[in-house]
Every structure is written in structure tokens, then in C-alpha cells.
View (cartoon, rainbow, N blue to C red):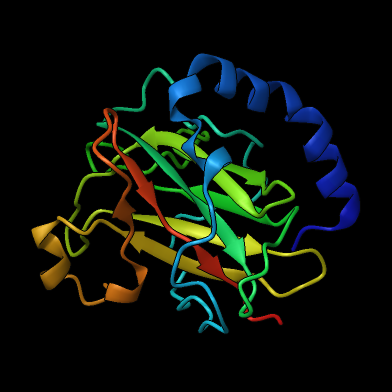
Length: 198
């Protein structure tokens, strides 16, 4: 999906954007301080796969801050780790995120609510964006593609633990629930991806 040349180009071109995120939101850089979870002591099952849906767009910008002036919704930080089944961090893994806005609409012409980044050497990632709204048939969710270098792509979705729409969404999986970290404003939702690699 992403070759080494593309990865290098995105790493260089996105350095300024990543730095801007840290400077603008120093108290939200929780993803840069995440330890391995206490339960991550042995082998883990790979993260459940889900459909990418009809709204994926390739070549999203490399950035951690997905907000743009027209992106409406409640501010949120999404943070976590990319790990192997043996709980080893996966550095330089691509994490591509896209979602609907606070009205339940996807930007299919531009890249509002869309972006990607690469994990640091400890497998950490973080995005700042908005909480998507429900739309017919779906509970609020994020779409994600995760890929380690020269490995298959994991495509999945992430869900909110507090949404009543989960019970009515036929695609929802409890294994893909994010969890809130502490009592922060804006909230920080965490999810650790486990790739099918040793």
C-alpha cells in the first residue's frame, strides 16, 4: 500500500506539522508518554479487522491535527500504541485515520477529518480531531488503517464506550472499544493496535 519512498517523503514533509501539534497542545501529548498497558505481558490476539467502508481516500496528509475550519464536532485526542502479538512496540508503523464530522458527514472532496502519521520508536501515535456523529445505521466510529513496513495492512474501526448507538450498529465490535484516559478536557481516548506479527 505504501512503499518506502512514499514513507520517507511523508516523514520529511510532515515534520513541521507534528512539531506544531506538540507546541499548540503540550498538555494533550499523552500519546508521547504512554507506557505499555499492564495486561500486555505476553502474546496478544491481533486487532479485529473490519471493513474500510465506502469513504476511504488514499494520499491523506501526514499530520496529527485533523481539525480544519469547517470540521465541526467535540474536540478529542486519540492516542495509543502499535504492538506485535508479543507486545513489542512497532516503530515507524503507518496509522491512517478518517471519520465523519460532528454532523455525520464525510469530506469526500478534501481531507477534513483525514490524516496519517508514523509511530515513534516506542510505537506511539496520537491524533487530535473531533468526535464523529451518528448517521443512519452507524454508531460514532473512526476508520483506521495500520501498517508496519513491508507487512499487510490492518483495516479496522474504533468505537466509543459510552454511546447507546453501539447496541444498534450491526458492525460494532466490543473488542474495538476505545477507553478514556483519566478525566481530561478535551477527552483522551486510547486504543492499542496489535498487528499479526511476532
